[in-house]
Amino acid sequence: MPATVPSAALALGLALGLLAAAPAAAQSPITVRDAYITVAGAMAVSAGAFMVIENHGPAGDRLLAAAVPADVARRSELHRNVEDAQGVMRMVAATDGFAIPAGGEHALARGGDHVMILGLRHPLAAGDIVTMTLTFAAAGEVVVAVPVGEPAAGMAPGHGH
Ligand SMILES: [Cu+2]
Image 1 (spheres, rainbow, N blue to C red):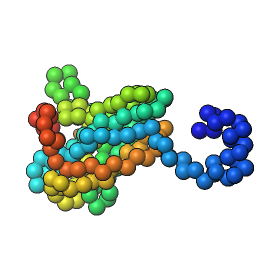
Image 2: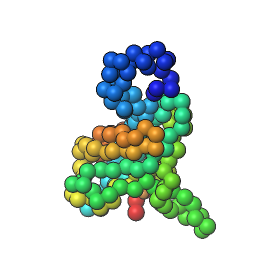
Image 3: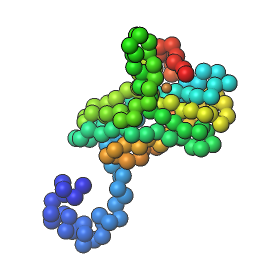
């Protein structure tokens, strides 16, 4: 960012036209690992997406939205699991998104925060890859290729609508 570039370098960059040519998202501080999608059978009309979002930057960020191609599903929502007054866990839309702390990470995991893919256009099978576009408040769009299928080990039993 210009604020961190020494003024001499900034002037040189402007003179060479380099800054104008640099892609804005060349060094996104956001990375995603261990992403996967689960589907509760071939007849399922929704699916859950889980991943660990890492923020390598010096400032906090926020995941605001997740989207999948229109030929995959009708829409996606950010959901969190909350306990209601009767002690029952329910999924609610996380309209404020998910905070990703500076220099930290936020896990979307079974039984917790997740991306809900709603209105599947066709069945998803293990091994399929879904292109998901994550939109962050600061980092902008991050595109992730998310495989369908259970990870190898260590996950709790599923959740569904
Ligand atoms: Cu959900």
